[in-house]
Each structure stands twice: as structure tokens, then as C-alpha cells.
Amino acid sequence: MALTATLVVLASGNGSNLQAILDACDRGQLDAVVSLVVVNRQSALAAPLAASRGIATHYAPLGPYRERFEDLAESRAAYDADLAAEVAAESPDLVIQAGWMHLFSMAFLGEFPNQVVNLHPALPGTFPGAHAIDEAWAEHLSRGLTHTGVMVHLVPDEGVDDGPVIVAEEIPIDSDDTRESLEARIHSVEHRVLPAAIAQLLESR
Ligand code: GAR
Image (spheres, rainbow, N blue to C red):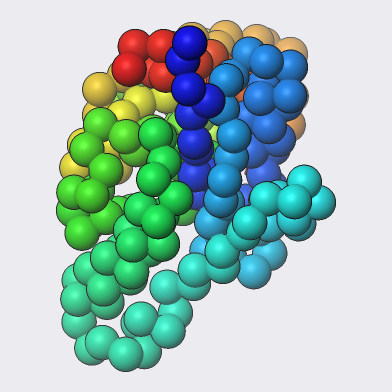
């Protein structure tokens, strides 16, 4: 019988995708437990959500590292190495970036080869970065973009929202869409696709 997998979830925002992962664990779609949730912003709603479920949380802001080192790359490398040690202590099967707005260097990624998974609200090769939905919406208005999407991919290196794709799903932009209705549709697809991609990865291991 397969062993229950251990997940560490990294989140900076509203935590709705953490919720989707926890729901998938509850209903048995994922044979996994989330042992630790890491947030890098005080406002991240994933922290109270995790605490309400009795899941350990770790607040890891980059700020103190920026103050300690003059060089940005040095501060990021030190931050990434310290956070890698915190995460490695959980012996996770997978590390899930669920709305994680920090670009890891190899100081972190090198510790977890083929184990770091990222969710991005756009199709492979499109709209990398933190504003993918805004950028797709702007392109819809200016140039008639008719679809965008969601992808879940492995994070092998420092490429931004780039890496071997596990699942990608196209999402139409309808003529009666608003920015808000498009975002809501994207999030509802994410909440289905992210647990499915994690399940697929765990099964293949
Ligand atoms: C999600 O839309 C996720 O795809 C996006 O942040 C949001 C987090 O939502 N990630 C990126 O843009 C990565 N470049 P949540 O906090 O409600 O889970």
C-alpha cells in the first residue's frame, strides 16, 4: 500500500489553493497531509487557514535578509538556504508553490530536485510573473485575446513560471466576461487542476 505523502505548501496570498489542496486531502482525492505551510507576507491568509486546521505555519519574510546583506543575490541565497533547511526538516515528498510570490534560487531548488511544483494562472510560455491575469485581460481588451489558461509545472531552475508542465488547461475569455468573471473562472479551474496535478505526480512516484 502506498504511504501517505507529505506536502509543504508555500503561499503568499489568499490561500484559496491551499484550501483546495486541504479539501482534496479531506475527500481522499489526495493521499497526503500538509505538514507545514510557509508564508512570506504577514497578510497571507494561508497562515490563519493552516492554523485553524492545526497545521504548523512558518512566517519567512525576506526583509531581514535584505537588511543583513548589501547584495540582493547574496540575501536571496541566504534566505533560500535557510528556508530550504526548514522545509527539508519535514522530509516532504513535494513542495507546492500555491501563489508563492518569491523566485527561488538554486540554493533552495537544488535541495528539492523534481519536487518543487508551481501553479501559474496562464498557459505555458505566456504571461510569466505576478500579474498574469491582468496581462491576459489587457491583451483581451487591446488585441482580442480569446483564451488564457492555467498550468501546473515542476520548478527545476530559476526560470519564471517555467518548467516541465504537469497539467495545462485552456480557459476561454468570453465576450461578456469582465476582469472579475475571468479571474473567478481561472481560480475555479486552479482549484480543480492543482490537486489533480499533485495526485498525478504522487502516483507516478
Ligand atoms: C493563483 O492564481 C496562482 O496561480 C497565482 O497566485 C494566485 C494565488 O491564489 N500564482 C502566480 O501568479 C505565480 N506566478 P490563492 O492565494 O488564492 O491560492
